[in-house]
Length: 352
Figure 1 (tube, rainbow, N blue to C red):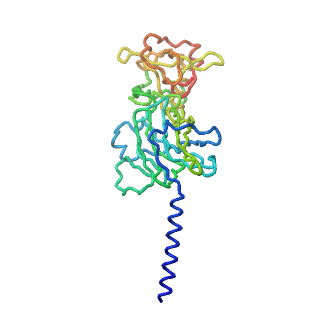
Figure 2: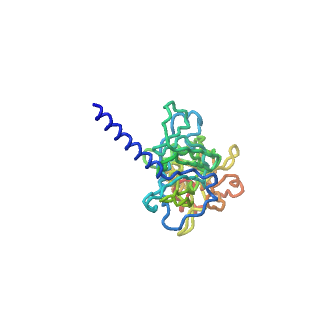
């Protein structure tokens, strides 16, 4: 028995000596106080960045935070990954700072960050926090999101990160009137007389409709070089579309005219002494086309109590609203001519 005990003690001692030796040989990695003071990494190899955007639903907790405004916002999950295979053998990522800058819209909020090893829920979830070898600091404001991560001793940073973002296309929502034109045609398909047509106006609110919301993604990083040969820093970046133009465009249509082989530049509008001049906006292509056909057949310059005319669109600029702003409608309003009536075309709201 005594011999067996001595044998076990000897084996345990050898195991401890091996463990101590391994720990002594393991290079200690420390998070740099000023990563930008570190020398730059060689151009090759480097860290390759990939960014993917997925549409997601806005969580219930944010539905109550923005009552009546949720339809004006978009939710996206940004998945960012860097390829560890692009590193030299034995190198590892010690520190990163991911920066997101938006263009064409406003970054209104975020509610979840997840790297697999690290999870931060900003919606007040009661799920107990997950122990993580990673540390993170988050900076956020209108139009930007930053997250700085560092790894604990002996741990590599996770090579992927997802963050859920709340985005607001454009700026202040536009308030306009949806035109509902009733009784344009009788049972025999004949056009109704202008005075017999009922025109109803319904208030609507929609986003101004921007080209897109894009983001510039930058990843600054610090590598721990293999064999304890020090550290170096690098930068990789990518530009992605967070919200496409089609996702922002409201489901509304209007009527416009154009010259041959060109886009629409003037839009159909109605006018009366009570409401002044306003564009005719419809809730379906069928409603807009039906009204255009009625105008072509009747050649009428009036419908119900309203005069029919055209307004001019102001010059469109990149990353500016697609829909014309009605402040210039009274100055540009002109009665609809016979030639204009024959050239009316239905299209998505404000699109050429």
